[in-house]
Image (cartoon, rainbow, N blue to C red):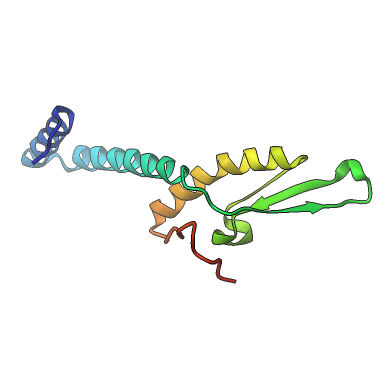
Length: 120
């Protein structure tokens, strides 16, 4: 049994659209609700702490050096970021993480646990 009023109201609305044969509206409501759930779950997953590897990329001109950071649990390219400083790269990675988690959830890909050893 649904506990809060908002959820009961939403379920009632879904049932009404289903009873009326309003499939397109029902599909739109379900799609929007799915996006909200995926977004919420991605944000919650971002609270987990994953190990991060960092690498300094040295160019001929030291002013062109930059850092690449990535979460090994996802491989080097799935969840990575670059920045002029390590702090900047880490900040960008935090923003990228939510998008990566959302995409993995949306496409049904498995999200590794932070404690897992990375697979090479």
